[in-house]
Image 1 (cartoon, rainbow, N blue to C red):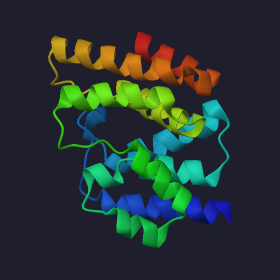
Image 2: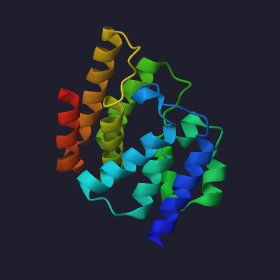
Image 3: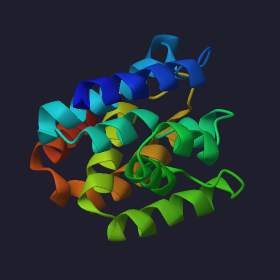
Image 4: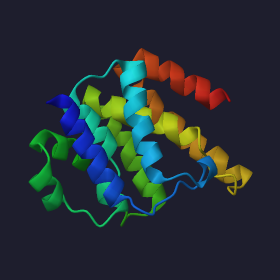
Length: 168
């Protein structure tokens, strides 16, 4: 059942991200971001592949929680785990290097990964932390735009939504 697998991913992510809050977006629970990413995929990219939607919900679980690849492998389809691994940043690298790698990687990524990444950036640019200074915001939006531009061909609807959110 596709819906039950998506609900399983939501349940898993909600437990894994317990207590985490968004830096922007009025300090909302982190799970709201993951729900929004899946929603954006469905609404603007007409995404109906349960494996892609599960990966969208789980895309931050390895880099932001104690969850491990082994735990994911024990709970989810191998394709979901593969997507999540592909979406996971190496947080041991300096920020500048991580960002450069992300731009390079996404240019070669599958359409599914590009759609997830674009939905993620749509959500992120709409909830920039209010405490960030102007230069940090400018730098972030410049990098985010570079990532998003590599993904535009994966979904016209998500590309349009990103551009609208960027202009706000």
